[in-house]
Image (cartoon, rainbow, N blue to C red; front, side, top):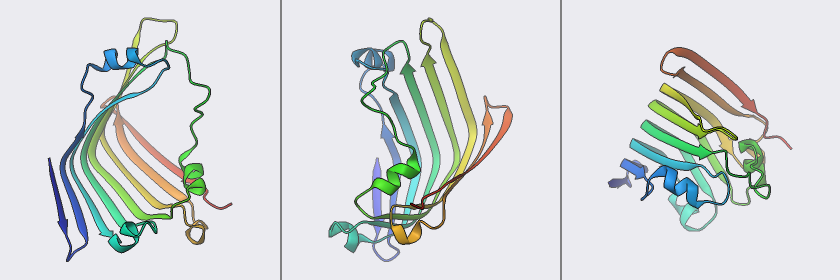
Length: 178
């Protein structure tokens, strides 16, 4: 809805950023040959601090001090009755970073006051599994593809209420060293 850039502070601000399928999620999932996720998301506010625009414009990499995402609401739908696409084995995030050709350095990504709803149509069943995370907060540090910064791991800390009730705290260290 709104994009602002403050050159003095090197601050990029997105307000009410959304990605929404144009058709119903079930119809969209049915149109795919494989069990592909359908995403619907809305971010009330996202601030990107200290973007190195010179390097970005010159295609020399993405260098960002921090990203702050507030009030993300994401819905994910997947129909597991469809076959899995064996040609698209997903890589883990830290392996994707290691294999990136373009330099990327984001010191910190924070997510606050957010929620996630996941729905999955189960294989060989006509049951819809639903899982949600309310009061979702996360902090990622050392998101980088640059070898000199990969001595330290990518750290992920998540705090949420599973199904809106149970406290769930997750801490993950993903090694970036070769």
